[in-house]
Length: 282
Image (cartoon, rainbow, N blue to C red; front, side, top):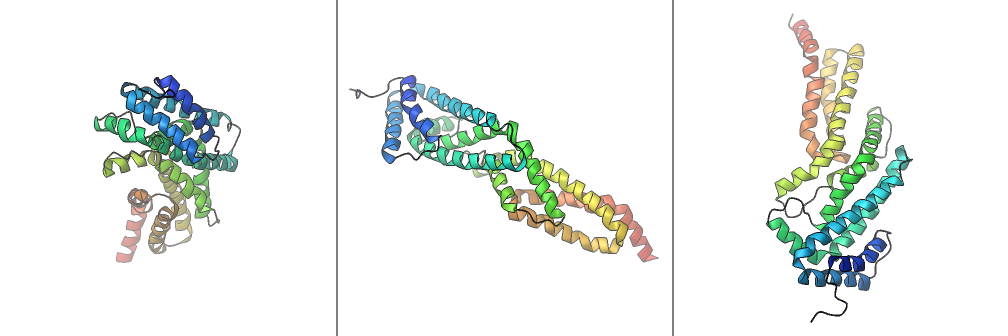
């Protein structure tokens, strides 16, 4: 016999869960007794309603989408540093809440979601991973272009010998990289997914800005220095950019960065370099 308070429909269990989830995303401390009660609602529902677990998953996804869409609406007037601070503050709180939510849905993860992943369902992820993907999908439309440009302007300032807070950029990169995690994929597939957001929203523009900066830098340098001095300067440029990536970007960018630098610093200057070599030979 089922217990009197046991939920038998998806609407019933969602009604029991919603208050706790809303409390969680108001960033209130949730007591263990409340956590355990929410976990038990899910456990009881999942063990008696296997065919309706997908509906519960969709209700949670819709809740997170609506929550993040409302969040975006509350920040439409923010710019530059204010926008970045709002974004990072909300990201940190969202991650904490989603980790707690993941724990509450741990039975759901271990049984329903794992079974779906084993069956090859491409449209499902564990709860924390799903929440991160929704963050990217919703916030990329409003935040990512503006935040990336702010970070790239900081990098340009550093290249021009200004002191910047590199931790800001490092924190932003982390939000781009972590968005696509699925714990049940192989390591190689997982890494590929993780980098999608980083490459799309940051890396491509970073490479473009880097080449533009050094293209102008090369012209200026060669106007005031010899080609020999320029050739000695190239390793410094490479070392500076590799240090930058290692310090606060993502190490996966190093290989492609070297290609981009090689193109603008060496390949594009081959005519000048060959002309200097002929002078030396004569």
